[in-house]
Length: 419
Image 1 (cartoon, one colour):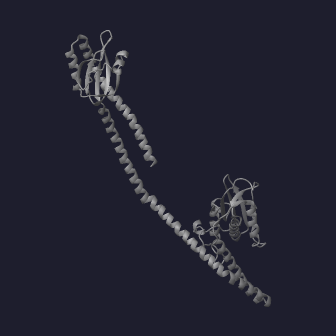
Image 2 (cartoon, helix red, strand yellow; image 1 turned 180 degrees about the horizontal axis):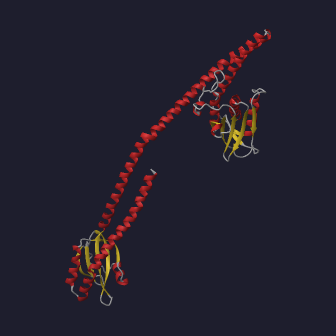
Image 3 (cartoon, one colour; image 1 turned 120 degrees about the horizontal axis):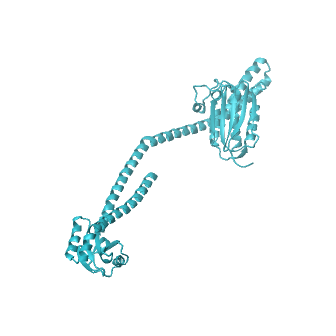
């Protein structure tokens, strides 16, 4: 629509210029006719030969561009005429201007009930003294018809091009863009419906499993106090270990089924990272990988739900520590409008046959059977997305050949101001 509007405006401006050019061309035609008969008519008028004057006026009709021609004396009285003319111009201001200035005058007038364009040409004697003037009339319709025909061609061409453009765009949109967008939206809708269903199932399963697991763990703990032999202790510890694993899964299911971020406040990213590192430290043994955190000296703020963003960082750190051989490095990269938290481990890295999209789907895991629920990265992805950020996963070897392992990057919008 903007292109069609601009082209229409351009055509309108062009037609306006064309109308001015066409009007000037028709004026010039009439002036050329006047020049062609000016000399013989003036000579005949000097001699007083009215029949020669009449013959000169009659000759202009052979050209076919004049509607009327007449000669007047300096008082505005008619001397000779041919075609449609005015009989008396003694009261005409235009005729008076011709006699006073000696210059050609023209205007649109009404003659014998018809709209004409009149041109008044002074007639001079040998001494350049004005002895009369000549009036040439041309139908105003000639001017209008010439412009109307040009305008019809221009606007007709524009309408054809506009119709063709609209047809191509509509057809192209339907065949290409609309179909693609519709498929994409339908895919997103199905994905959202699937995630809602997974969230509802996860919440229900978590609540149903929570109470029985608590009872099982409590009974196993009581049995451990009654049976102190080594075999009983080993069997009961195995039961409690599996219960703890299921309890961890229940907690992840509950976290995954939570509603999106509803309230965010300006938070210190340093505080969130430090709290996440403190939380994950309770899960690590003294012989586990070393966790190194490098934070910027400046205060970095983010608009965040503190607990949920901490939960996302805990999940990323847990995955990195489980995959690492000896160390995990956390560093923060700040830019004007964004901040990136990079978590790098020195483990085996991501499998090449698994894409990032697949890793972020619920219940997808690269860990051994029984070691992962497949909800950690999916939970992180949804939390980060709720904070208008992104989660990116890449093998460290793809960016620096000297290092191995995986890099998980959390890109978040940077908040302005201070705490």
